[in-house]
Image 1 (cartoon, rainbow, N blue to C red):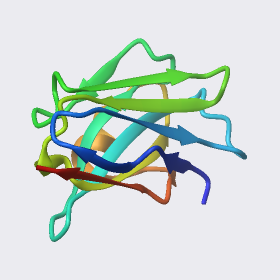
Image 2: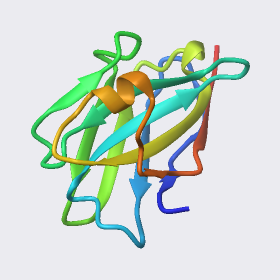
Image 3: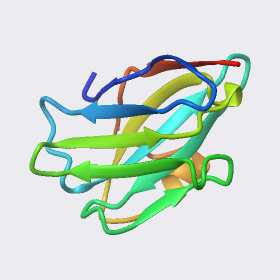
Image 4: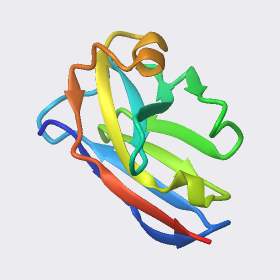
Length: 126
């Protein structure tokens, strides 16, 4: 496992969480970093990505306005702030990396990732 996602947990609807993705053995500064999630019984969904430099980001319509992705290349970490959590956000959240400066294709079409994390569970109670 090259990436490690953490920060998940059980939270009430309307609450907030911050997920983190670390890479102990890989330098992430030349990778577009993405977040995916997979809800029970559903396929994997790409929800956000951030450019290698951190100057551009993408959000799926389902999370736009509630999720904020950021990165700290000096600390080799990527974060996903989640606000106004909804029960529909319940899922395992994964971070993933694809080589390059910027691309939304990999998160939109879920292909070509170079590294994946193990995932962290987010459960939202109503």
